[in-house]
Image (cartoon, rainbow, N blue to C red; front, side, top):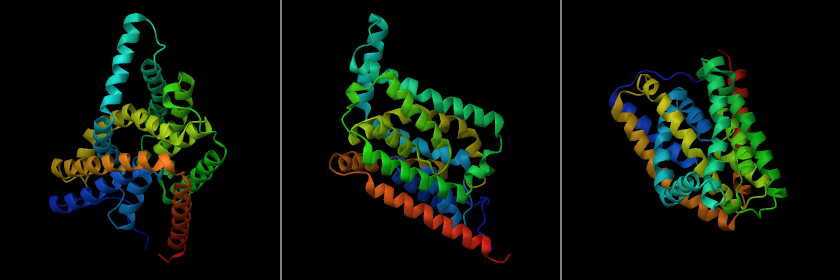
Length: 290
């Protein structure tokens, strides 16, 4: 029998345990280019917990946003000050103002794409795009694209050189992350490397760019998440958010340090193996007698 893909109602203690695990998984995978959404979909299904759903996933991501805002608080303060000064003086030439503009422009594609999905695919939780096989294919395709970006990217551009066009390019890639398995971090990192960014600068911009989109998604879905059967109330949900925040902080620090001296090939390999194993698993489930 295939594992259940829907989450059953749970008591508070069991829900706390589930959310603690989901929060740790979220924290480990949100900022690494391996797709947090895919892991938050696949792992609970493999464990027999059922799919926590889009709403629950979005709210747990708020923990990661708390971490990234805290980690980059100095950068954000400089950007906001630069944008405010640019408005006052009508001069958008400073590094901070251009970075703020790039973030704003880069956020637009995912907001538009999310609105279109909301209006045209109201039952996105059960869309074929959220199936295990689709996640596997997306993981493999993105692994290939990341490998190409790693191989052919010039790795010369710094975040201080960012322009609005760079933000739009990376923002379009970010919009693809609405498809589970693509990975917001992975798609933006891939696009940045293709655009000639240095690895650590690409990761830094990816973190900053994700703040508006993930925050809005989490807030929009908060009400729906509290009504999910798996939620078990406010306490388990908060536990998941806190776990995601703590682990995300560590993941951000680790990735920035790692990319200063290493390539992204380890993530390419992981995504390929992850995708292939999922395809093997889904084929075995499909072949099993009912």
